[in-house]
Structures are given as C-alpha cells and as structure tokens.
Length: 213
Image: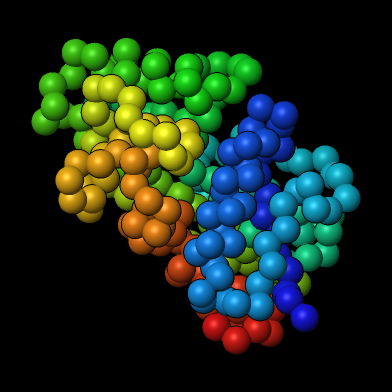
C-alpha cells in the first residue's frame, strides 16, 4: 500500500491553484526518492481550522502548519513556508511574500508592486533569494530543514510556468538567464529552494512512514 503524508498550506479560495501546483511539485520531487509515498492535500482530509501564520520567520510558520495538520488528521504532516527575500529591501518581502500587496492575495499585484519598488535599483543591487522552511510533524516528533535558491530580480515578467514571483526571478544556477517561470519542471526542481529542502527531508519521511528511501 502507498504511504500517506499530508501537506499543509494556506487554504483560501484565492490560493487553490497555487496549492495544486505545490502538491504536484512535492509529489514530483518525492516520487523518485520515496516511491510508496502518496501526498495528500488539505482537500483530501476532513476540514479543520488552520492556524494563523503569525510567526516572524519561515521556520515558525512551517511548524505551526505541520503541527496543526498532524493534530487534526493523525497523519504525518509536512508543511512549508517560503518567500522571496530581496537584498535591496533588507530581506523583504520574506514571510509577507504572499500578501505583499495586501488582501486579497494576488500574485499579479505582488509582482507589479515589487517591480515598482525596485524600479530605481541598479542591476548589480537586485540580488535576491527564494528561501524555504519545511517542517515534518509525526508521532515521533518533528524535523525541520531549510532550502535556498539565490538569484536576482529582473525588470519585467517572463514565463508562463511556476507561481508567485517565479516570473521575475532568475536563479544564479540557471544558465541562459531563464526565469524560474521559463524553466522546465525538472530543471527547476533540481535547483529550487523547495526542491533542495524536500530532498533533504525525504530520507526522514521514508523512515517515519516505514518506506524504502
């Protein structure tokens, strides 16, 4: 039988499509590492009240969500919190990335606001990082890992793939100056902040589920 792990994330009507992409990304990355694993989203389990993401950092928010999911479902639960941290903005938007332009959440408004804020910033100072914390909560305790993808913010939106700020971010490790939204899924997974974090925690997930890594 396939082993199950839930993924917890902000579940609003506005973020449903983003959640689906993240679930697919997680299953895609875990697939070769833990073949027995079946990733469940919030729509696959009974509804429960999700915690407010009010921690000051990615790690705190990831832990909040993983603990709530495990308490509600009893299934080993994995949660991530991530965002873009821009050098010229002293690391912001950071944990505020998803709601940088206010409510309701909008990737388009967030991207346009960030470009406007950096309009006068010269190219050498447009460095940024995508950062991610992934927390796993289960009967035996908790684990936490981090991932990062350094790069830079360009001056226009490019690409149709990905989500969030992918359309304006060029990773340092990507030859050819493609944005994250222009890269194919396999290439992006190999260098992304979430890909790195999920690969690091995969052996622990396999051990918790009694699966073969």
